Length: 490
Ligand code: GLN
Image (cartoon, rainbow, N blue to C red; front, side):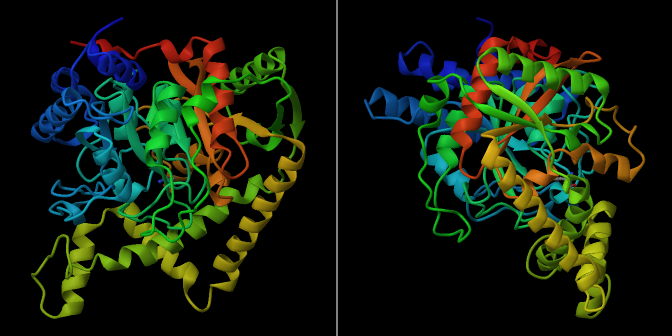
């Protein structure tokens, strides 16, 4: 069975329910393992040991009193550090927020707090979630638990590494263009970006508001289902969160087969610098689905080729607006060496933001300026409509699409010097955000000793279908049962 910290959230939940383990024992075991592996993995910016033990004790007390608890009560979790946590520093990976202690919880955080989850720490990320390697954090680079010379992916690299190293069985990330699915692929995890509007964004430090979604990272599909269940639903504090019914995702995913499922394989997703080994892994997964009763057919989504370019207009445009609030006046870092309010803002923003963030603010401001709006921003929005229409048309014919998650396995720390090449790591995930669809990455093999994932894409609010299809695949393969070296390190 392995050690306590290596259990899945689902297994922990079962053992807690029958009294075979206490929440305190699980929290202590996670914290001990964090202490052992953090010097190498560096997934967490803040470890909240005291709070975790107090939360665990409270759940144990409620359980002993016979209270009806939610399935994840007493299970440890790590939270990406762009999710506001009341009383606990929340940095978004930026020097700008190095001293920011939110006075409130993000909606997802308060839901998990009520459900009795145990918060072990805040996970590292690329500054304001801009990046694909977690090397853009103002504080530290996180390593990949499968090979500490490689990146964990990004921007939710800390959340992914924490789970792959078994510092916690589950974590939350955020995904604007691939930041949950791409690190899931690099770290051998299941990662889900829900439909836009499925999960409240209240209290998520905004990057690009029309693209951002919060979602789960886990080692198994069951854990992904459990965590989605706990965070999904309408929130009156986020007008873009929908009333759509929240299904019993665990029940749905475990109760199924793929007979008759129509799977489309869009050929453009294999032309974007995707390595032959990754393509082979995805195609053999397709063959496996076929052998289990699904139908598989190639299809075409021609506007895929323009998604990356359009994203790098829309996302910076929204970020330039969202990050205007960090002015050195209201909160965050203030540099007060200059006189006058313009000088104060200039210096605070100059010192508080890293270079990737500044570049994007400048590109976004440029694209939105009166003379260039039509040439860039409007056209990018038009491309976005084309992408969405093509997906809609494909879903007339197919229930689900299957693609690689990332073109290649995790690269070496410091190796990606060309910023364009780094951006190509998200070429398969970005179109899904542009169309607001749900996308899930599930492990589908190893390339050069490193895990790789495949991406399942479904129509809006069909998360249950993605989880079903991923669960069937997980049950028929062994990829998800492998543990990283850091997960077993003492
Ligand atoms: N790598 C992409 C970017 O830098 C996506 C990041 C994300 O999903 N947050 O914008």
